[in-house]
Amino acid sequence: MKNKTLFFFCISLFYAIGSAHAKEVSLPDFTSLVDQTGAAVVNITARQNAKELSSIQTPSRPSNPFERYFGMPQNPQERDSVSGGSGFIISDDGYILTNRHVVHDADEITVRLVDRREYSAELIGEDEASDIAVLKVKAKNLPVLKIGDTKQLKIGEWVMAIGSPLSFEHSVTKGIISAKGRSLGQQQYIPYIQTDVPINRGNSGGPLINMDAEVVGINTLILSNTGGYMGLSFSIPIDVAMSVFEQLKSHGTVKRGLLGVNIQPVDQKMADYLGLDNPQGALVTNVNKDSAAEKAGIQVQDVIVKFDGKTVETSSSLPPLVGSIQPGTKVKVDVMRDGKLEIIHAVLGGLNGQEAVTVSSSPVLGKLDLGFDVANITESDRNKLGIESGIVVKNIDNREVQRAGLQVNDVIVKLGKVKIENVAQFKKQLKKLEKGEPIVLLVNQSGGNRFIVIERD
Image 1 (cartoon, rainbow, N blue to C red):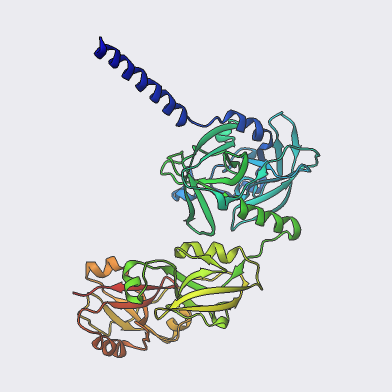
Image 2 (cartoon, rainbow, N blue to C red; image 1 turned 180 degrees about the horizontal axis):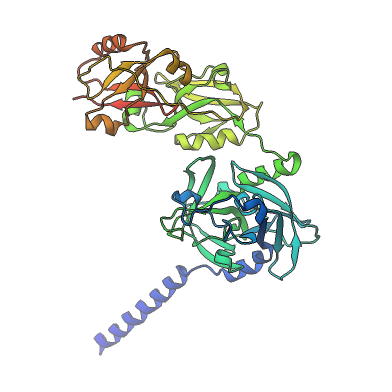
């Protein structure tokens, strides 16, 4: 009898503990979150006239996954081209944020609220670098979303998206923050938020909302082999979006700071060579002439570990930090140079573009027992590349050299810290290396500089 009583007591206790645990790990309630935020999310229809689209050819399936945005025009050969997307209201007098690709080149933009009210929207401004656009409708007392703080976001926390995927208006999906500070493709000035929130074409421009009913990002793109959701969704942080909004609203354009360096990641081999404790920071591979970096004294092979007081974990985290600061601002740059910390102060310039150039072929002049050959290059090639000296890589026949990243037609600018003038000097400098010492090359590759470490047995 005692054993039977003890058995039922244990069973009851087990169910009681299990029930309590189930309550503790239960999913959050998103219904109140939708009630608080849904009214401020809008559906956007952008219409283009056929006369302006007669020469446009739209591929049926983009080959680049980063081109698969959610608001791409549909049926461009019809009389009007209509694209759809999402957006959200950030001021009660009618300012709306969305993605640039949702409304770019549109002749007519219509905004529809959840209560079916429709407004004709004016395009206040657009920024290609961030893929953000600002719209304005003539209305008052509109529902708005509260602006959150992306610095407080934690990996693993719950978030929610509201938008119009595949034209299904005001659809709600949820997930978690998967990662922060992602760098994607050519959008180097955006530290994307990665989530597993299911979003598809039409979600673009809609809000990413935290559990405090605050918008923390703009849902912008997915990474997919099929064009559909595969668990990788990316959003523009709301602090970046609001900075762009303020500049577009006030000036119609967006200005970004420019340091004037080319950088690459610091891998373990390079960290060992430079005497760094950890492979972190941004390794400077080139300092542009007359740039803020050159004027401040930043040098090739410096490793930028802090910028304006913020830690530079990887090379991809530096461009968003620089771009977030206005030109003309004086900033502090912490660099590791020859194993020592140097504090440098620089006044940022303004962003402009650079063109990449390639190296033309030249006869092989130097045979090396290193798994690759080299040749002198012509004066015209030096002028095209904007370099004072260097030799070109030819005939790579060693797999380890290829794995290190060296490519045919790369121009070797430095061996270690020594500037390379020609093949003869390169050979001479190689002889000075100790047996087994790695070969550290600064090369110009596809118009940009990078360091390559080739290990030797």
